[in-house]
Amino acid sequence: MVVLGHFDQRSGYGVNRPQGSASWLFTWTTAGAGRLRQGGARTSAGAGALVVLAPGVPHGYGVEPGAGHWRFWWAHCQARPSWAAWLRPYDAGHGMYVIPSAPAGVRGRVGATFRRMHADARWTGTGAPPDEPPPDESSPDESSPDGQIAVAHGSAARELALCGLEEIVLLTTARPRPTDPPPGLDARVRRAQELIDADPGAPHTVQSLAESVALSPSRFAHLFSSRLGRSPMRALREARLRHAARLLEGTDLPVERVAAASGFASPFHFNRVFRARYGEPPGAYRARHAGRSG
Image (cartoon, rainbow, N blue to C red; front, side, top):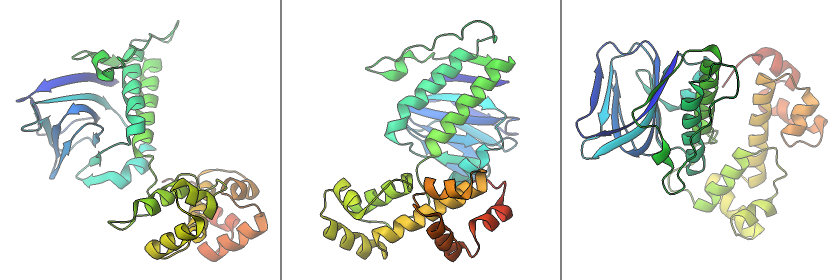
């Protein structure tokens, strides 16, 4: 089963499970703040935070002291194995995974997905699925079914709910994480690196990246190189090679299609630079890494 609900709890609310839970627990905070612990790990959760607790570890949670209240969605389920790779970068230890602040642009969709899951839990698999409650434009969470617990026990409802949770995990963990820029990095350089990481196969140029951060091409190239120690085009090539490696690991696309999808116009050039970077040609790399995830 998948069990989920939406609570708005006041100060004093708390849950303590000395034996942990038999299922995974997902919490998505929409207002106020909560405090969660799992084994020896602790975290606070404000609006836009997704906290995931693995089963079998003592845990507890409640309203953050001084916060006044904690409004949050929660869901218990058996997580799909494929989610592990997406959550791994957010491992806080002891089976706790913390995405502290999901991008503002995806929060509305995450809330809508929880509302849809809550409605779909009542579906029997015949006829039309129940309508999702429309959000209140002035306060999107006001339409959430506070206090109502939904149990998706039918096969159709359960799979829809798991697909919804998978969407939520993807939305909240999808921000690019291939590089770890140093603290205090110039915001314009950081933005350009984010654009490269988000879509390495796009036809980026020094001029297009410079325009995206309102700099001249020469000023941008100098600033980028001086801050990161590599030119924008070198950073782009590295991002494209990482992207190509992921496609080779996780898909059966022909090498020529992998090259094109990663921004390399020439398969010959792609084979040459890939071999220089990874020590073997793309075909051999795929054969050695086939089936890996993450």
